[in-house]
Image 1 (cartoon, rainbow over the protein chains, first blue to last red):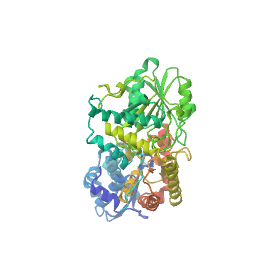
Image 2 (cartoon, rainbow over the protein chains, first blue to last red):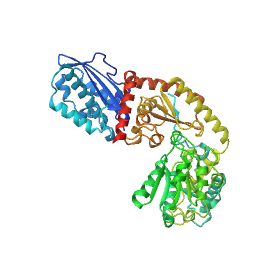
Image 3 (cartoon, rainbow over the protein chains, first blue to last red):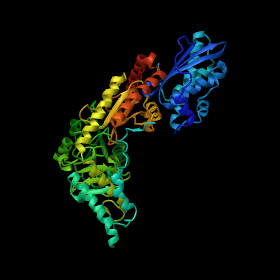
Image 4 (cartoon, chains in turn blue, brown):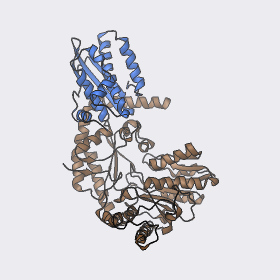
Length: 146
Length: 405
């Protein structure tokens, strides 16, 4: 049911852990639904200099978390904002249909962390980001944890 | 790498001796039991000997045993067959919230597609069906009560004798799905007082795809599978001779040293349970501490998801199962655990270990070595360290919201 690539990311997740002095934190998912993701970013000169995640969830949730951090590390915020759940799923060689919500969680975690970064800096977030996050929260049928 | 199979409630390996007993009927004794010549009569005799063996072990008579294509078919046959044959007497069926899907979805089908009314009685926090709730659910038009003998996920034994008595007093037919019990402890249809009882061969070291239904003499039941006159006209289709022989042989073998095996598995199961509780913080044992099959252990490991644990254990050669949503093919965790009042966020972290005839002390030691590392690692990846309280608050918050909705 899972691709080798996904299993490999599940067994050896990249960038897990916490950034104590993060510039942005995204806390998404819901323990009642079985997955929670905390995503921490450190931004330097408009680039995601460091990124870490903590995820409670199934193998697909852990693998998509790992993959999304790998995909955006070193990228500019603008580039990171272009990442979609589909791209995360594709990078893992696909997800079973019932697990697509895990890729939504990964995208949501990243975007929530960026939104948090904007608000900490007092920067007006792009309207698209705000809209997309709203949709993600509706789409993946998981309530936000907070 | 070590291979440790702890999923005997899912299925069991075929006993060598059973395979040996089956072989002639897969090879040279291929006659159709319905044929008249002497050659085919060997197959006929094998089926009837098997029936006699099963009947004796269940304390039933031969004509009360019908072989089926597995446990699911036995449950389907019992419930649909009885409901359709007795509809003129009433339209109401009682079952429980923790039945196997082979019962639950049959009841739902009768409810949704055939207009039967079904009451799903609750269980207490130990996962035991509430007998009072069954009593209160009985109506004048109740025709059938179907409650499992032991639950497949938790191993919790149900008060079937009491419910059977209740049913008898009110003239209601009582079916029990004894699939997880048969082969583990003695099942006596007279002592239990049941009218219909299902068993499945592959749960007791027999082949897959063969089961049996006990139908008490005098119970009217419509066939599920129509066709030839096989199985006294109750189940059409050429008999699965090798399978039937295998079922009977496996069932008989399971009764040899049954009590000793029960004690042996109980000791190992208890060791596993104690060991896990000692080694891993934030673990809950599900089900009743005593009224439980000796081989089954169901736990919740808080703040870890079940499928992630299973896949991590699989890497180390350990086979177990979980009631997490991710293993159910839906987004909902186990209906059994949620019926017991276990919140969703905990049910996602459930694990079931079910021991069997080939489980050794070393297997248990190995799991006790591997599982704590698996849990520790997954908790390291998860927000467990920082967010334990936060996770609980979030879960509580959304549970409240769900109640409001």
